[in-house]
Image 1 (cartoon, one colour):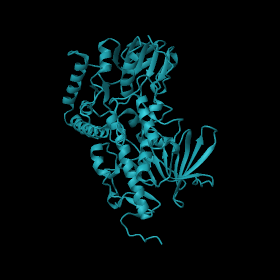
Image 2 (image 1 turned 90 degrees about the vertical axis):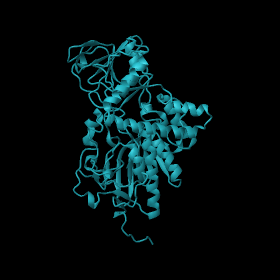
Image 3 (image 1 turned 60 degrees about the horizontal axis):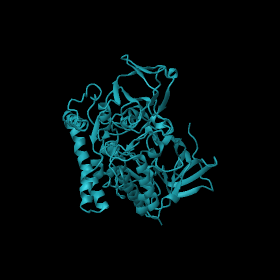
Image 4 (image 1 turned 180 degrees about the vertical axis):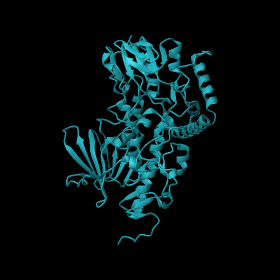
Length: 510
């Protein structure tokens, strides 16, 4: 049912830009806003009591990045640690960005947004939130919304409703909800899942557990490498300054990733053979058995390629600390689980590494002029703006490249857009299908043959639609977007300023 737009309260806190989320996206966006639009006032609203997002939420053993920090780190702040970094190292890095750039005074922690409403008559967003410290309802108004809240539910991970769960007498927990107080020393642990989380937690468990079993429905691709960057080490040895190292190493890694992504499509079998060679090198076993537990059914990079520093999970297999079972779970039992193939797995602790629940816009109810927004009814513009939703940009990063590459890129875009609006004296911007887009075929946000992890396939009907033209899709291709987005024509006919399509003559304000 349509609901009237929220009227701005007299005591509302007003800012030019409201950033939602103090994770890797929100902090980076705040930096770019300060640097490129220094006259804009802003506030960052964060649900948790501290910054960090994912890196604060996840507490499971060994939690670390699955992207290299030379590209996952911001372009404006050099990364000087190991390429694959612990959650704490990433939090320390983010904390330095906040401190060095005076971002802290702009962040409001413990604020859960309950509603966001746009009013075209006032050209204003009104955002209502509940303040954790006293339970009070507070109101913010903003000219522009910058959504940096991430893409999944931080409180409710995806846990299948397996039969017999109430029979199990041991300890069951989802990795996303892991309590660091749990002592798993000498325990038999069963990890259900084989994605990036499992690749991280299994080697960490194996250090102290009696044994770790990985139960997977289908295998995952793993990329084994030393946790160092040879080029960075050589440049440091040569006395090159860290900003130069950061810039050069980022460029080299992005080039290598581009080559790898194309090869995964053009010669997937050859790539898989190379991945297997790395496993053999790190385990020292030329006869390492890949069948059936480490032979995926899809091509490399159709789902995320799990990074495996020093080949740790495979070394665990060779050392007898880790074993794999490839089968579907039939039921939980009193002592563990039984698979459909009849394998009984006993465990003292069962950890579900079964992924996320996708949460579009953080689950916040959005309204435009009294009408509730159904994101699946909108068409996305380059994976960042939406038809019918003015003065808002959404940060959705990359899956094959580091998330943060898009944070930096969209930081530039948003600031260019805000500055362009100021030059035009425009109060409102939105995107709309052009004349040449009429009748364009609309489809789900991404095609399954491009990228198809479970959380995304389960949540596609919550996501916006895509068109069949480059402007109306998020192609997940950093190497194309790094040229396309910076060169976006802000006077292109897909943009409407104050309700008038760009490029049309508008009377100058008096």
